[in-house]
Amino acid sequence: MSTRLSTGGRLIDRTAPVDFLFNGKRLRGYAGDTLAAALLANDQVLLGRSFKYHRPRGLVGYGPEEPNALMNLGRGARLEPNQRATTTELFDGLEATSQNHWPSLEFDIGAINNAVARFLPAGFYYKTFIHPRPFWKHVFEPIIRRAAGLGRAPTEADADRYEQAYAFCDVLVVGGGVAGLMAAKAAADGGARVILLEQSPTLGGRAPVDETE
Image 1: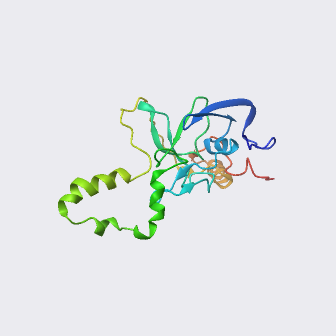
Image 2: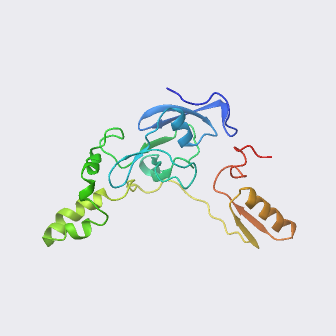
Image 3: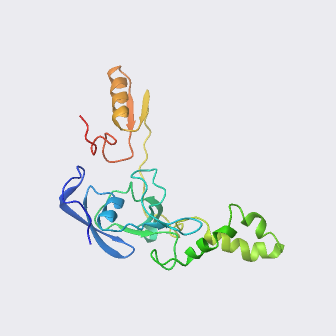
């Protein structure tokens, strides 16, 4: 079921559908969508599990500050773990999988940790599993290491090649929001060589989607 609004959304093109996979399920979004927006529009509210207790987690942000919607993107030599769904622009054929659960996102055995949360305070493993010493190295440490982290590191060499450039400027402006654009323009008007860095594909920050004059 789709919960997408029939109107609105200045940055998406409803005439350009985009198909993608989430946990093996084929879904549809539109050009200009982020992965997070497309998942919500497809009524996919549960996006991950918390690190320690495996509690269900959904979106709480819309940009790089989002702590929960971390995904594996791609597979094989093009696997990228821990990518934020809120900053990932949707493209045709994108493959995304959720992290930190087994056997599935909806039914996670690790959620049993939540039932014994009172016995698992912060740092408990630093003193609980110290003795006997041989057990730490051969039993406890391997189990804790497997439980650590969210995404799994790629096991194959990166198949992509990356460009690099050496650039020089008088003024570097980080962030292409309204304030960043004004600062860059003022510096350029003053004769400075300016580089403006922005992580998203559009300039203006919130301005393109907010009602601004």
